[in-house]
Image (cartoon, rainbow, N blue to C red):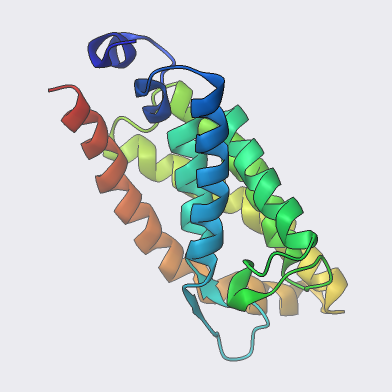
Amino acid sequence: MSTATATARPGAVLADLLPASRVRDVALVVGGAVLTGLAAQLSVPVPGSPVPVTGQTFAALLVGTALGARRGFLSLALYALAGVAGVPWFADGKSGAAMVSFGYVLGMLLASALVGALARRGADRSPLRMAGTMILGEAVIYAVGVPYLALAAHLSASEAIAAGLTPFLIGDALKAALAMGVLPAAWKLVKR
């Protein structure tokens, strides 16, 4: 498929610009999982929270948006399953499902599918729509991660929000701003 065909085709995501094959899809899924695992190692502790600031949420949303819902979900499923099986690529080189922050990983599975579906509808083509897509993706991650944190760490709802949501809002705004520039710019670049 040529670049001109892929960019003109409704419902295309950035990954669709590559020649279609099973090998491509497997490589993209594995690459998305690896990117998320590497980004999780960019980790900064948050005082008073068992959840660090990491690059994994940004990577998970980027993977979903660039690969589409199916491949994005499969990438994050591979990331989660490999981490549960012992690959030390969750935040701070951790693995397993016993972490109080594991709910965020589960939320990333759903968020990657959501942002991938929105990208297929053109949400990654303009800065404003991309910002909205990132915000929705982050909301899904928090909708799963914060209640999981409350249950796993025996926190009240307000304590879980204070430890697992509030400290991350500024960073999420910065991630949305970065995505607002990067993904629409990538589409403009490939349309040339």
